[in-house]
Length: 158
Image 1 (cartoon, rainbow, N blue to C red):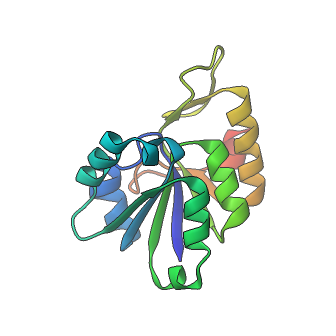
Image 2 (image 1 turned 30 degrees about the horizontal axis):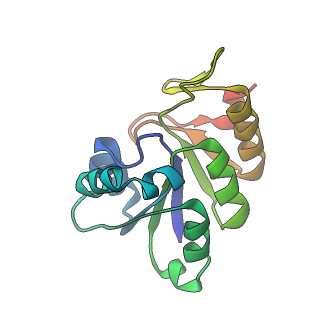
């Protein structure tokens, strides 16, 4: 079962390894990223950053959808992370995801970035994808750390 989908451009990093994995009590971390899965150096660095004792998989988005569609995935507690909002929408449409957390995300190429919340500034395409995401998953929010208050995504996008 997917306990949470987090959108975070850094994928696995200190907050994910030390804080989120404990708070979610997951046994598996799956990174859905076409870019990271194709870059062997980045893949190795992400694996090094992963918390000890957790299974970790870094795969392209379509492969993650195929893997997590398998009924055996329901027996695991999966923390799913992706590094783009557009891919998050694709994952939500294909998988049973009930909780989406917008973490750190910036469209660095945006000419006039739209500030959504602390740690998130997006271009028009990502903004539209966030609106779609908030309509697809009722429990969609931004929360940088489990110790801070959740901010409902729909309200942030108004």
